[in-house]
Picture: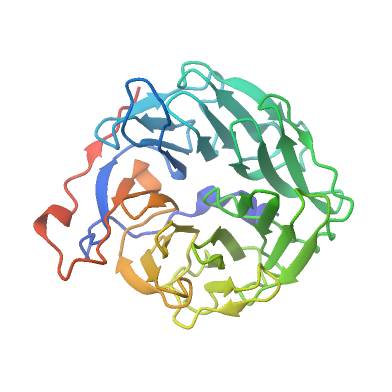
Length: 371
């Protein structure tokens, strides 16, 4: 839907470090003319000469960034002919191989892949039809990936590749029809979650629904959730799963970011039923990420929240006041988030700390490379 498609208009007046110093996130860098919405964190296996966690980020104005030393230095990458694209999604596997996805009407939505660290990019998929609009990309392996697009011909578009080269629409005759004006949000590349043969994605607009397939997209169910909905700016923006197999969704209304009602919900039965979190996040949240240590983080324009424990999605606690769009976590020590003005921050696990120490405070953001 049009209101969801042009999320570049999400320009909120929340600035880094205005009133509350970062306690759970360390600002690594910023001051680049881009609104970063994609982030991918990977631990390379058997990568020659690379032992550190690798971080990729992407955003508007054709920006793609990569760090092979856990954020100490960054390299800006360029896609030929993609200088004006809005790269809303990135999925990386190591320092060499990654996909990026741009969002926009028709040919502005594209999927590229690199296998040489971003030196060259191969355009793998696009579509000239004006209804074509990609929202998110996710992968099981380097060769098996999915991309979700807004509805075409009455159903959500789901693209797939099984060889890492050729993409095509997945045949989904059993997928329930989309509601009039229902769509997905291209806000953080996290409204689609895949694991094994399971596929989940969240929607917004007239309803906040979760579509689910347990057999790689052959059969589908859909369930309404209690997340805020009813207009083009509200619904589910992000979906994740915890260590305890809770399915977590966050969202709200991006035009009313301070609203704290019906922002987060969770399911304990694989998405069949949903309940609102007992203690909600502190406003609209565009992304949720969970690590393997029973902890989740949710980020948005007016701050961040964390949730821990047996029901990791039930109680959210305010953490910071940074303006962020998307988050990704490997474990309690390796988490990253990105936001407007080229902001990139690193997660700090404070559960074992009783007070903020000087080393946890954000240092002045250093400029990212502009070439």
